[in-house]
Amino acid sequence: MYMYPYVKALHIIFVVTWFAGLFYVVRLFVYNREALDKAEPEKSILQRQFAVMIRRLWLGITWPSCILTVIFGTWLIILIGFPMWLIIKLGFIAGLLAYHFSLHVIYKRQSRGDFGYASNQLRAWNEVATVFLFAIVMLAVVKSELGLLWGLLGLGLLTLVLVVSIRIYKSFRNKTT
Image (tube, rainbow, N blue to C red):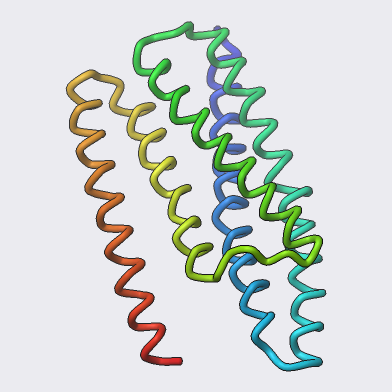
């Protein structure tokens, strides 16, 4: 069991770098999409630069961090077993992995020059990672059934606050542009 703190520390480090990549790559998707609205040569210059930044972030940081998070997380499960809170947390992690794969689809599409989503849609999609982050961290820290009930209520409230914030930001942004 002496390995436990080291495995846990590495797991947390890669969770942090994975989430950093998830949060930032969607911002880059937004900026890359908004570059379409610029005049040449600015449009081409920005899109070339964003393509490089997105590729390096996605393939050099986000994907490796995801893989290492899963490896160290699996190792932790081997060390501690399957308490009830962990089973619920794994459900949220499955959702987070689905979200990660959805971003990979957007990455591939934008790499081909296919911008199927508006920048506002991408901004909203960026907040999904926030919901997963709150849910997963709260489950890992609180670890109780009562905490789960309050956590789910809090998650619903957080989602509502994010939706309202996105709408307020959109209306503010539309007024200033």
